[in-house]
Length: 522
Image (cartoon, rainbow, N blue to C red; front, top):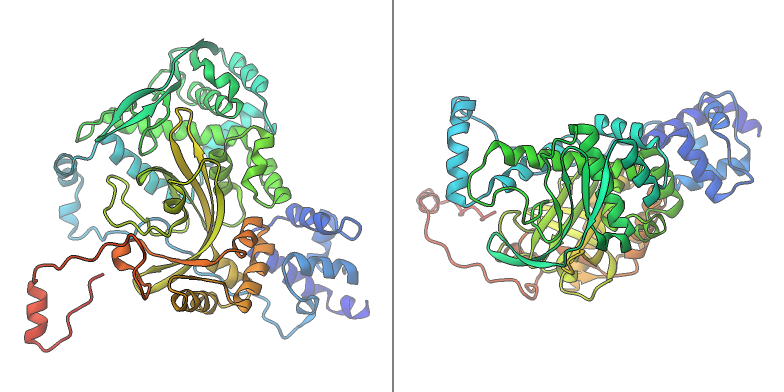
């Protein structure tokens, strides 16, 4: 105890440093301690006094704090140890940025003339382009929209969870009337394919919500639709400029929403942005940041726990990427054969396919591709080494195969970039990733994770408090890549296409003349 008193201030500074490094508030750290050992857990005020050097933890309390951060208790007392942990490099959000030079070619006037022609020549609809713009804005903003969060908190008063009756009362409070209709799924054309589509609900200005009676037996979807329509009334005055809620669409919309013709108009952008605002508001209303963050901590981020709250897996996963203190998340909602209805890449993970058209050579070892034709209800967690050029990136995802209201199968997948968590925990992520990659290459593309890497990942998973990372460690890790034509496996994976020979290029001839090796194709 005397040693703790002598080193109390230094101990407190180290505790504050590692707590902030992991994005935890004092309240959240106290809650994590209570989960582990309620008898010796410190209160919020006591933690604050420890960090300021006014109090010293007992030996039992220090062991408890060390366990939360997967450290030896002696680390907090070691004055020779670095006070500041290394800051993990933040992965880039979204796709690589394009240098807009020379600037005169990227002037507003030139872009206004060129973009419509680009969309027309590529067959890109205004709705598709608008959703690409919104996704990029969302990723660059780190999914942070405080005005929408505040608006949702004001409406729901952060009550959690909300029942269907609560949502209906909120509808009445905002002057909204719910009318029911009956419609079965129909075949609808979405670009070049037919999909089963079902109109779930729509808003008729100024105050009527029309809802499919089938939603009455699906409270999770009903709550989301009601929350999104309340959002439209609160945010936009219920003017009706909002897409209907229907299943089976691509790129975040339904087959009925927006124009499918190439080119774009102002209505496409307006509808897409309003749909995004209403969807984000609905998630914030149903899962307010503070109580939902506590819920995730209690449940260790298990998506299945959301069924008790009557929330859809999509709402659970999307809000997870927002409220977690760990910022390096991604989320996919994929429909067969490889269309993305929704994407979020807070960690800049390279996409395994194109958003506007199915690619011809997707890597089949991504969890979403392996599961997209699997049986309904299949779930799984996977550790993956993504080989992108010369980089090896380490991810863990949790995926779930579900069906939408019209019966279309799709896969929801939420994941984290593991490298920043390892680095923040004092482990060299490059070494861990390299050891897993080497084992997978040796085992022809997938293999058991080496013991040292497993130990490091278990420690990181415990600090993050994400249970499905440990679940994934029970399965072989896999090598994945953005395209199977770049497959790094010693024997190309099944389904990979042989890269076709290409025509000779001037740069190749020039390199030969100068006696240089031709550059590798990226």
